[in-house]
Structure formats: C-alpha cells, structure tokens
Image (cartoon, rainbow over all chains, first blue to last red; front, side, top):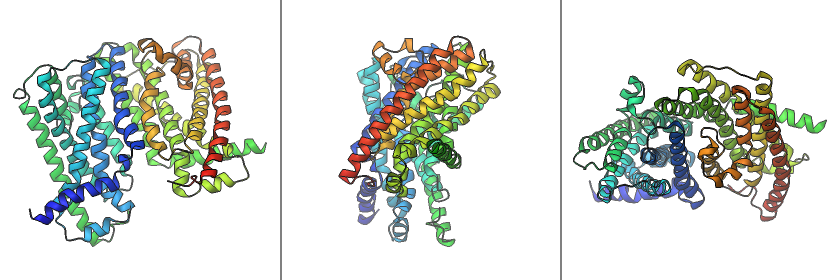
Length: 263
Length: 256
C-alpha cells in the first residue's frame, strides 16, 4: 500500500467520519450512544428478573455487545447514503483513489467508536446492576469487544453496499438491529430458540462474540474461548469481503446505468 | 366546529401520510414484534407461559408508544427539513391545532402494532386471546391512544427549540418502556421510579388495557389516562406558545 493509500485510509476515514457522522455532536452522541444502551440493558435485565431467567450479567454483556451494532451499522451505511445526501458520492467515486483504503479507511473510526460504546455500556451497566467480572478477564474482553465491533462493521459494509440500491437505509439498519437483537443470543440463550433460528444465528455477527465474552466473565481463559473469537473474526471478515465486493459491483453498475444519484 | 374540522382533516391526512412511510410502519409494527418475540422467549424460558398474554398486551402498547415517540420527535424536525415549519407557524390557525393532529395520528398508527402484536402472539406462539371486559377494552384502547398522542404533543412542543429531537426520542424509548410497566411489573422496579411512572399516561393506559383483557377494574385507569392527557394538552399549549415565541425571537425556527 503506497503512501497515498495510507493517507486515504487514515485521513480520509477520519474526515469522512467527522463530516458524515454528526452523532459526534454531544447533543446526539450522549443520548444515542451512551444513555440509550444503558437503558436497553436495564430493560432486559428487569424483564429477565420478571421472567425468573438468567442473571443480570447475562443481560449486561448481551445488550452492551448488541448495541455495538448501532454505531457500526449506521455509520458504515452513511458512507454511501450520507455521501449521496450531501451530493459528494459521485465526486468520491470519480476520484482515482484505490477503493480498498477508501472504504476500509472509513471503517476504522467506526470500529473504534463501536468498541468504545460497548466498553462504556459494559462498565456503566455492570456498575449499576452490580455485576462482578474478574480483573484478569478485562484485557481479553477488550479484545473480544474489538473483534465483535469489527464483525459488526463488516455487516455495516454490506448494508452500505445495499445503500446503492435502496433509499430507506435507516429502515434497513433498524431491521438489521432488530434481527440481531432476536437471533444472536442477546437476551435468550440460543438453546431456547427454535433450531432454525439457532442455525441462522451462528452465521451472524455478535453471536460468537457475546458467547465468548460471557465465558470470559465467568472465568474462562482467552485460550478456552479462542475458537469463538476466531469464528467471530471470520464471520466479520466474510461480511466485509462480500460487502466490499458488493460495493464495487454496484458502483460499476451505477456508472453503467447512470443511477448513482437516483436512489 | 372549525377546530373539530381542522383536527379531523389533519388527523386523516397524517394517518394516510404516515401509513405510506416504510420507516414509520417499521417503527410501529416491526420493532414491537421483535421486542414481543424476545419477551415471549424470555418468559417461556423462565417457565412462565401464563404470562405470555400479559407480555403480549404490554408489547402492543409499546408499539403505540414507539410510534408516538418517533412521531412527536419528528413532528417539528420533519417540517424543518421540508421547509414547511415557518409556513405552518405563520398560518392563521393556532400552531397547537396544526401539531395536535400529527401527534394524535402517530399514536393512532400504533393500532397497527396492537393488532399485529396480538396476532403474532396468537398465530406464532399460540397465546390465547380472550377479553374479559369487551366494552372496557374497546374504550381503553382509544383512551390510551389519546393519552399517548397528547403526551406526544407535550414532547413535540419542547422539541421546537431542540434541533436534535430525534436523538432525544431515541433515548426515551427504552426508559419509558421500562418505567411504565409495559413489560415489567412496577413492583420489581425501585421505589423512586414509581412517581415517574404515575405521571406518564402509558402506565395507566397499559393497566387499563390489561385490566380490561385479563379481568379487573379498568375504568379508574381509563379515567386517569384521559385526565393525564388533558393535563398534557394544557401544558403542551403553554409550552408550544412559549417555545414558538422564543424560536421566532432567536430566529432559530428553521435551523436544522
């Protein structure tokens, strides 16, 4: 990767994040990414108490990780939809910049932001509900958070590609968020879901990351959950690869059919 | 008579308009179904299948709340984005009568959620649907919609000065769902949260619907829901007048 590609990757990514992602305004960031996940944790923890099922720790970890999907999915889809909204999409796609650093550079700040949201939710949600996690699990947990955020960003890249085809990306993102909430073992153990749902969940981001985090919090070592972490990383990589390929194909199609600004 | 006509025409217009919005239908139907699904599985896993209808009714009121919240959050913002807010404010009709039909429409759309959530529970999870007091149920549903719609008016009025109302409405979704006892009995929540629940119409609306469906005394809850709605209307009128005036003075009405 040449000097220019490195510059596009880092500078372009940060600039895009700052320009498109107006959640960075504290008036939007704090309610959307810091307060809302805490209440999601509390809501499902109390439903769990009412239903007499699982521990508070189960819901803190499940929902803190699942909320990573909000910044990762919404920010990545903004790379297409936001640029189109600002009428800068064609200027970017006509540039000679290499596409890998162009698009993956935009994913990096998204991934970091998703991870920060998750860590904040784990710490604050855990403190409110009084859960205890062994200190030696902190570093492995951060690793799992980063891998899971990367995996969700991969899904976001795929949804960004779909942004070439559909206008209502906010609707699409909300659907994705809801599906992850139901399928990925966030609030219901996979073994308590119908078999088909359990099978589908194993091909989605979050599922393995959440399971790994729960085992770490219960005292397992990183080596013990290594398979789950690798599975989460592999699923994220597959989504990111498919998403990137999808973006390239649809970028080409939109040039051929002059539909870049149409959706 | 002109006021009634204005509200009726506005209500019909906004219900039609919102029904054509994929985003709004998703908010009012799809998300409550997902939350209901999670709640069903949780209660089933806890070995309490008898509480599924209880959860189903709560999830359906959550749908009304969700569409009201997004609607009231967007009521002012959408007009800003479309450049019609100044036109509406300067119209001869009082601004409150322009906003009220929109917030009522957003809660009325919640009927889609009520029906779809109850049907989802019946068809997919086999949850029996039996109503103990049919008349009270038929009254409790529109009373809840009215109470929530007027709560939406109060929210919308305060959002005139707040440019990021959508973010605030996103933040309020889960806390109100939690504190009003839609899916969690109030007795499980900390005592300090109870006074907050008491001043929120969804608390009494969901109680009225549950008491009517499961058997109990729904009428006091219906009365409190409507009374709270009247209080929200009075507060909303005052707030809307004040914030509208402030926005004009600061020239911030159309700032996005």
